[in-house]
Length: 368
Image (cartoon, rainbow, N blue to C red; front, side, top):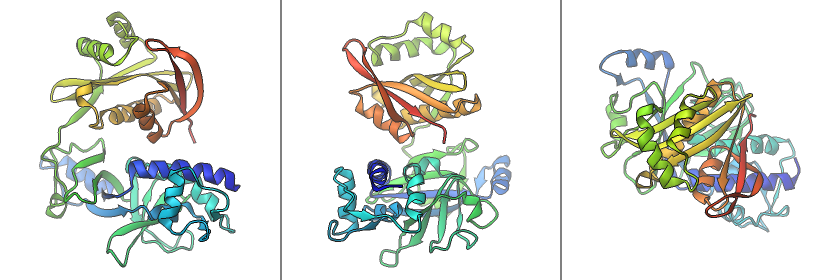
């Protein structure tokens, strides 16, 4: 890997780090699948075998994850290096690649790991079966993982390395599955943002051991349900079309879509009210996101991300490898969501949209 390619990856990853991890604490709740399954089958739903691991993500931690060696004459500190990345001022003189090839290995999974709260599926203690390095805890998936150590100064667990390894090859048995992921800002006392909840768990009906109960606060949480769309949802979805799109689909078009073998429609429901919807079309092994809309009164609550996750799951189930979508050039908020889900711009359609006229940005998420 040359430095020019490294700069492209590091710069994109820095933006993802800022949006998803910077100045946050992340709480992983995990356990042995056979034990959790047994507890879920009990009517009490006491998930007392779940364990917790808390990690903090500082701005200066980003440098360690890149695997590069900083030129101290160009970047005075790890934070200075990070700020250069965010400002897109990183140059080939600012760093060197590791001579053993480890930088290329880390950079190949760096962007994926920035979406850790969504992508991590397993966690465990690091073993010496893997590469010779110092780290204590590992979280990730079969494609790559991130290592954590306890900071002697703060007492917090912090990220210190990346591995392009199947996590099962570098952690002790048995496999520890991540069931829930929460996050909070440094200033918050308790965790209230549920970033990931395994589909086997109804968080509102399960109970955790006291140690975990004291760490999380779900009192203000409203349950968002993502389910298949039905004919009875057409009036509410029609209103979303009128509110969100200048080229709103008619009721007949929506109804025809429900009956189409290639289309999959989903609605987001909160306390009995439809607050969002999405449409995925799967043809010839590719998935195209045709529509995603969230009621303006319910935005910034994670509904769009939940709809995206449901469509990604549906696409996988249908055998779709690559996924694509189109978005207005000016819709920065939506583009950030798509980028955080792994989509990248690959082209444009000039003057594609009407009312107002605007280019369409074509984005793809290619199967690795």
